[in-house]
Image (cartoon, rainbow, N blue to C red; front, side):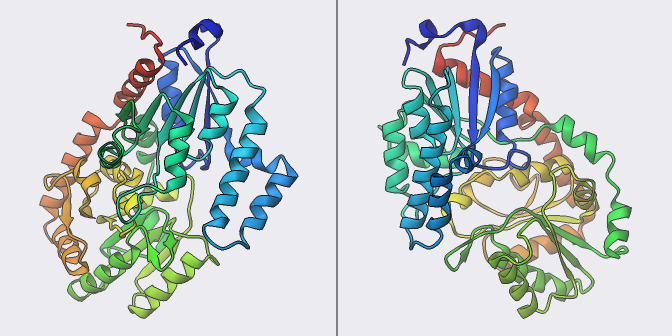
Length: 401
């Protein structure tokens, strides 16, 4: 591993960042690229699923996996992903590989046995007994990454405590967001336009943004808890409106599940579902600015429960009141001075939402404190140098003053 500085021309260092998520919405690769520029390393972005589509036999495996029972379905997809990625990168001369999450790490290690491998863990499967799946565990053992970067401190602590011999070097680098880019678009946002667009007038507006997902009969983001809480809030404030943006595409199982819950709770006339958009879409920015309370529920799927979700940083940057269900990860970021915090019971969550709607002076003061905290700790201008230092320590690259 450590001989790679002798093998590669240090003046032409290039990193390959592999992601299995759409990089326009999941912005971790952009943070990594900014950090690596500080080390004079150019970043090449590669979509792992695009490599799979290049090879018909492999893409056929992915299609066939839909007809297999668990766990064969996702094992087949993972094998197809690793195979397609290896076929795409095996001829590259890779100095540094960064892989978003675990799947794909084996292919990158095989393609670059003498190169540096970093796994940037945006999302991690934590099972109900707080272990990780056997497949993920074996992937980490056999890919021998030089560094694990965790977007969640809570997940990092679980893995380090549970598998002390597995993690040789780990760093916690939060998601954060690019505040300059956010503010550029947010400053142009129009709450009046959004309210007119939906015909809201001056009605109190609750907003949730972010993807929902089902895992068996469980929903990971806590949409059910949020809808139950909204029904309780409506008894106190009958004219509230709830906007759920980006949770699911029409026609999907998750979308049908949400619609069914909305109808069963009698919220049809006060709840609006909006589609997913570009993060800086004008309508989405206007929605955030128009909100009276930004909602952050949570489900009981531990990988999400322990994650530091990107939406919380957006909420903080938006400087609008936040009502959230407490998790260890979230409490590592904000406290009662910056947000209204509750347990997972809908009644308690509803009571915190009502407080945020009732005492506007306190609510807006908390929102300003959240914004200030974000500026001090979670702007990419602060996080990118930390990311760069972590990479430098793991690879032996000198950091220029």
